[in-house]
Length: 220
Image (tube, rainbow, N blue to C red; front, side):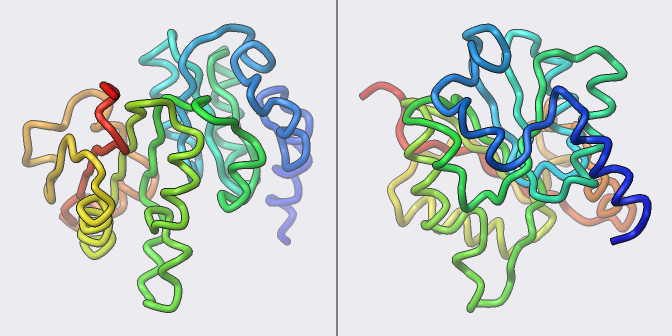
């Protein structure tokens, strides 16, 4: 591990807005009052990277709590540091493997999940590692409230199509779908937030895919 990564890992250990591994478990079922000291809706960004979406959404929606999840602490460092420097109190970061998400959240605790530019895991043998595979979707279903929304933004056309197929196969509710976000009417203030990787893709004129879906319509 390089010196810069070591420095960032050491620094996030001192950040109040970063919880690493076991430190996040006591907040299961209690993120609102326990960590954010309010009962606002909880929004997760999975594989948050540098936390651009987490931080920017927190600024746009002060009436919600935002939690960025990623295992790579040197990436989380950037978003966490920005939030501290700009005094954004409704954002925090959790350094865990997404596979363990059920150890940190209880039934109905999460109102919304964002999956932004995840590793598409293109090999068929790695399908179970895709963050929109049935294996992961079942985990999200367990922690989302009734009618809770999921979002996928990806440059990978195959992952977009794969996820759309799973939405249909599993009888989920599709709310919005586009293969070219910035040429559609969907690119509002939130969807126009750009991650580090998205900016790189756009420089090569790569189309950006987007899906908005849920397990139910919230009217059951």
